[in-house]
Length: 112
Length: 111
Image (cartoon, rainbow over the protein chains, first blue to last red):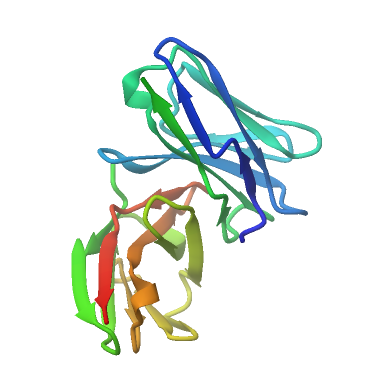
């Protein structure tokens, strides 16, 4: 158990819908990262927050957005969902940047 | 674009044998990390090696880093069936902080 929690574990929804994925980092970790894992693209970095501020952006679609709250938990919002958004979404956290990133168990999103 | 590339893509061995996986990357890095993923589950951090380190050990794991060749290797000694998983190397570009993953090596250990 890495100490990073993610909810929900599984999410099944329809095209065009909007969902919110939630992540609680390890106690004391200031940095939160979101990654997407799909069969064709592999593991891709989406976005990073550090102590509430956006720090870095990767291959995140405009339909996706995220934020980190004052209690350091983070949410990833996915809207206008398409079939191709079906994937495993992981959250990771680290104490500081350039430290070990610890991954949560992931949320499996299925878009029908 | 892919930063790290693992080799081989798949590896099948018997229990007790050693398993070696290699990772090559393209740009300068601060750290290189190895992760394990059991089928469809979360990533488990195995080891982090910094760019100024050449070798690191953790239990049955040995990681080497050659920054001149931009490559790393992960050696698992005396493998067990429980080591069956996918193994990923992940690097951070020197100027950034996000991890860039390779496609992974799928290791299968049979008893």
